Image 1: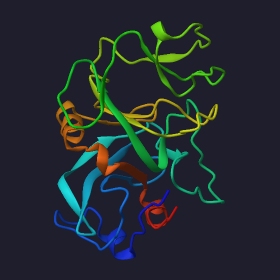
Image 2: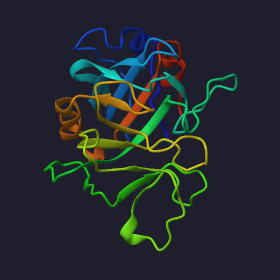
Image 3: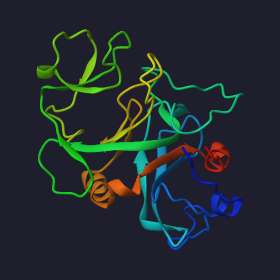
Length: 235
């Protein structure tokens, strides 16, 4: 899959102005969310949206402050190549958000939401499995649709808190490799997470309303020290 080739000018000025543009032809992905933290250990980050028009990337909306993994970031599995000398690798339960380039899956929530992007209503019967010994690892399932529950650890996709009232699936670890991290979302929360990107309800709803399926949106996220090399990749 082909990922965007970013110029050094774009990298140095990303988040600089609301009207930032760069000439980057890309026929496959025309919506992009970029998340940048100060360093590997920070649980705070900045998020900016972009869309492609006339082969130029243009900023959408305001840059927002979000929370990420409580232990910062580690290299994840997605559309990117991980540096050979990378030492901080995301694993299950490490409290780190994944570094990399990731496709976005469907949006989800507790109730119906009329948007153009694929959206799934979650119930108490939906589990996201984080048990590496399960064949359902890193997948959201409906327990009523499976014959045998072979896992002992999972996340409820609907519960009393509003954390998953609205959210978006991040396709981290798409091959569901055990112990490499599971159940990564963008969702509602005001404090650092176990590895997801968190923001206010209004902010996540704004993003979901903006997303378009045929734009093949991607999430690109990394600490400042890694963003140049990551965004220059061609896959």
